[in-house]
Image (cartoon, rainbow, N blue to C red; front, side):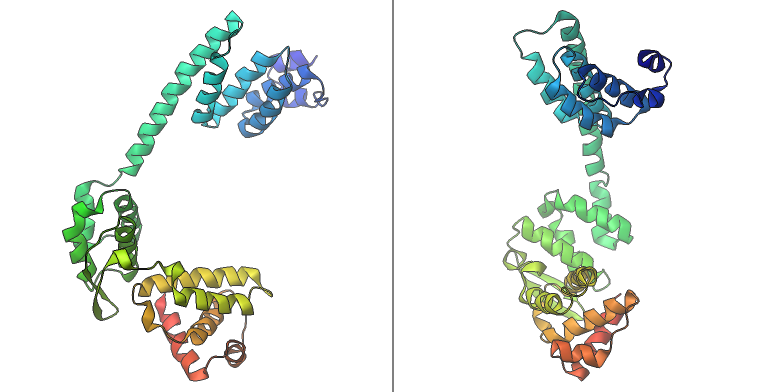
Length: 305
């Protein structure tokens, strides 16, 4: 009866009769149904277990296991499994031919997927990267350009990077991300950067990252002590905001000296955005911040967005 249901494509109905997973044939027929229903992720999980337990139905189960891997686009795992199986000293002829066909098919799919991935990685041309560095682009395109620069040899664009960093009209955050790329690629050269009305000179090779900085660790520690025990979600949002805020200042983090006032200001601002009422004087007390310094820092934090 179950086989008739499957033959008619009534997979959902058939599954209701296939509950005894200690039975090898039941495990196999469940894979047939799940594949027919297009439930590939669930089928893959069951196929993994069924493959380990299979004896008489091993190669039939293996075929579905490979099929599920293919549909989930796990081509690398599928190819590795097929290589392992095809290296066995004996495979029944009717299955060996099918496994070889699957190997050829999935290897081709894997190669096509790699080509698509490489194309996406190069979605912005060198000319467009040069245009971005020369004139700046929308935030969305800028992030794509920066991502591509991080996987390219940024030294090829260094003259334009220098111009970008010195231009007071380009976004501060994008300059910070450029500096990080220069640091990651170990560019050992002093560069001028215009940020927040200041023109400074810095060598990216010797810069510490934002999350390694004293201000990040100190302010983060204060936020953790005050918020984390009571509201872990608010603490996570405050830490995220802190990192974003410091990136805007990077690499001039040493100008931020009042850690207590900054911690209190971030707590107050992020809580306000989350609809949580906080008493500003009470926050100053909890963080040990001077009220006047807190008010000044809160203005900076509030104007940041």
